Length: 91
Image (cartoon, one colour):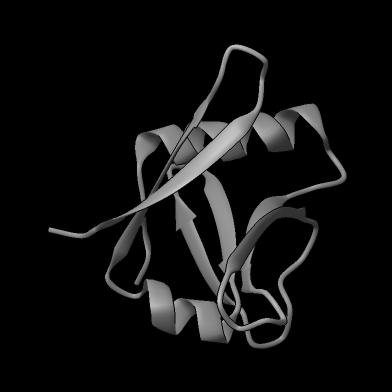
C-alpha cells in the first residue's frame, strides 16, 4: 500500500483546512495509462483504495494502487505556494 510522508499529510491537512469543499487528495491513472494525476477530492470513487494517515485522507484509484503499492509519496510547497509531489521506493 502507498505510504505517505509527514510532508504529504501536512499538505493534505492544510488543503482540507483551507478549502473545506475538499476532504482528501485523489491519485488516479490518466486516460493515457502512462501518467498519474493528483487532485483535490470530496469523495472516493467506488473502486478507490482509501489511505488515512495522520489525519490526512488520500484516495487511490485501482490501477494507480497497483502501480503505487510499494511506493512512498512525498511532497513540498515551493516559495510561490505551488505543491509538488515525488514518488520513492519504500524501504
